[in-house]
Amino acid sequence: MSAGTCSCTTRRASRPSVFAPDVMVVFGVPGTERRVYKLWEEDRAPAVVFEVSSRATWLTDQGNKRALCERLGVGEYFLWDPRYEYLTPPLQGFCLVGGSYRALRADARVA
Image: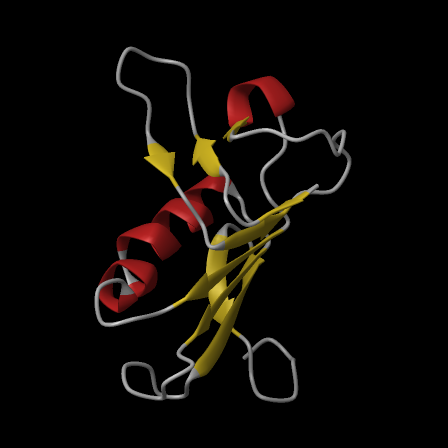
């Protein structure tokens, strides 16, 4: 399943934690259309999340959202700054290794 306009709910509760990645890819789940991806029902974290950073989102994308994806077990997390204004370098990738994100180098190896 891949989604670009789908929010992701992390747990069933009266006040669930919700985040809305710009794009997420989840393998091994039905490709049915859904507005909300419920982690506790699917029992599978996204394999990869892509965030397009902007003036309004870049701090959250680098901070809280990245930390949440790390805790949820999202295998890879990518940030892209299409205007080259907020992120250096403008494309950043992270790979989950032993429960923590490690930066990917430009040659796609884990640093």
